Image (cartoon, rainbow, N blue to C red; front, top):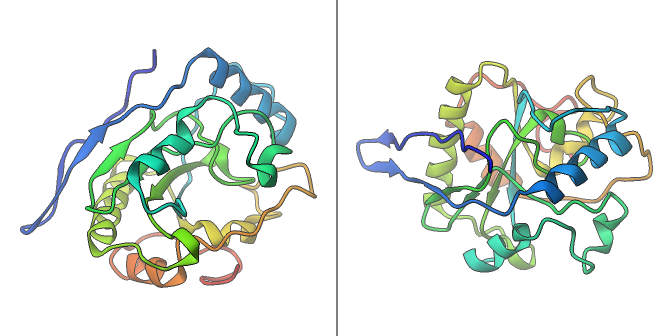
Length: 220
């Protein structure tokens, strides 16, 4: 059983309290071993554990407007057969460290020092934040989610001095060839447009001290 590294409840402003709830997804021996296999096949690393040292925060949306439906995407330890876009990437299911509900409540799904599968090439170096929303490509993440992301990312920055980058999922290809990029399969890339440039622009306007993606903000 994993021990959560939990962040305490924070005050973002006198009017906004960030609540972090422990909402663990299943992360047993199956997921652990499949993650090791993913690391070996995709990153060329033969590891004894799946611990990470985070160098970046990657922000996503789930493309599902319902919290329960979003959470269910991460529940299984193995990848669903209805995900042909990423099935060739390995058997371990997608996951993220946090899931932010539309009311701004932050749910921690897994330990922060454990590798999640949420972004091609950068999983081994990053903490993933999923936001409920974006269904049908609509840019609909809420003000409450923005405030929660600002507070959460600011706290992660304090907690992990190793974190240098803050990026939207749509910017991940900017790191292809970067020292943090580990994906060995040159054909394994998928198009991403989440969470939205608008959301990332507003987020970046309220946090500081992060480096931009190597190809520049907003490039996909």
